[in-house]
Length: 144
Image 1 (spheres, rainbow, N blue to C red):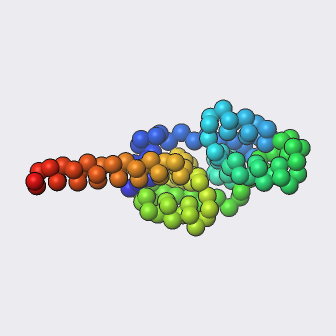
Image 2: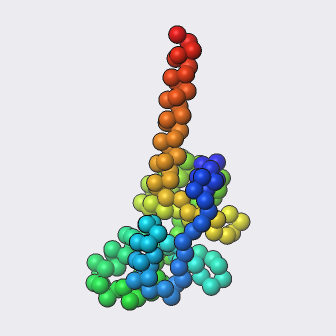
Image 3: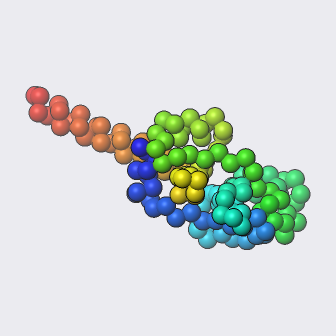
């Protein structure tokens, strides 16, 4: 249960915006919170989309700095790939690799329950590698 483990460690807070929020507000939010993506939440509480740094860069490349006055709805990715708290580390890596994404909203019971980034997955993997190395050292020391 890698996703549930990640959320227990980092918390389940998710920075969200509304579809009407300006791209400038999103850029400010990404900068202030030092994050790479925000979930766009519709009035009914459902996920309407996601805006990542990559979406902002593509929008600026296409329309120039005037895009900053447009809304989240104008640049958001509407087809949002999500994950479940029960998804494994391997499953997360596969979803992120296949979809070429770095952020996955976590959905549980139809509701937004957290956000997992590639950094979270790498951190989890590094902890596992370090734990395995320590176990191996302990085994070797006790066997010799």
